[in-house]
Figure 1 (cartoon, rainbow, N blue to C red):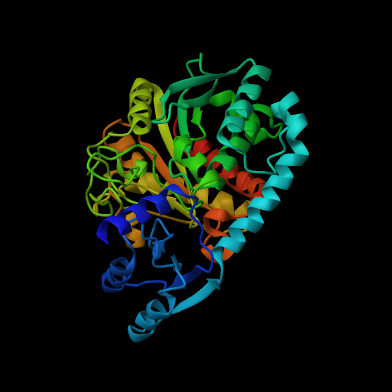
Figure 2: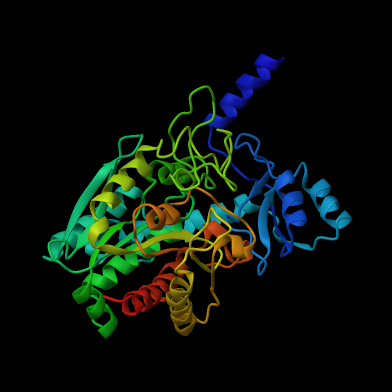
Length: 423
């Protein structure tokens, strides 16, 4: 019987995972460690089970925590919250239906642009989510069209996809900015937003766009987890990790933003290979994070700004993520972060919160922006968590109509950072 159950589990994990009837609960906001502990004890620390899934990467005091709950356990989960006087609301009664609707809409958008995109990728209007190969085609098209730009590679993913970025003003002596996104596979709006920002830096006519183009060199990798990203299109929309095998486990993948050598595998990370926050067998065990580390090390002497773009929560995160203490220059980092947050609000009225992950309630160790600052000497290291604020407004599956508004507000935030940082 145990063997049969194991085989059924293997078959189920190989097939496309669906979330029919899963309810999304917005819990809290949680206000103390006891409430956080209760919630985390409910969440499945095993990607194969997926009965209770934590959707929020950052647990904060200002907004509810989003969880997805399978039909079989939802009544019991709701009862537990009621018994502990923890407020919750149901924001979605069938998560898969929303996934299917948004995918159909995106497929229609892609179909409309298909031939034009093949003929000239630079015609892309940032009105759809792109597969990884199309993301690469787009930045290659921009590089071909602009003499100040060129594509570069930092290595290969586990499934042998080329990790491709675009450099702007790469051959100059200007100060540099590193930007990456989609290190977590399911965060589609992150890479879509970064593609919009690349376009603005290269083609924008505003004074801000010209400032960004004329005063910095840019090293931008829009997608640091292409294997996981493609898997979210074909097998599991909520996949987060890489796709590398784990020795001694049938579970696949490591959380690439718990895999950096900064308080590696500390609080907020898991040493269980089946967990969504698995830290890996060692720091930089993943090809993707090791490749990013090596490239970042090579540009450290002239790169003072590091931005790793995530979603979702409407946050502008500041180191340290993996330590309760703050860096010695926290006040300066916060000054610049506050300017970024103010710029976002001015564009579309969204309220972002700037602070460290522990300030917002929850430590997250082994993250890239901690390593970039602590080890690689990049002073202004940030990790914005883009729109939406909550799962109610779309979560990881936010509709493609949000790409341009997100691009506009985050571009404004990038401008604020670039103008505020001493040259």
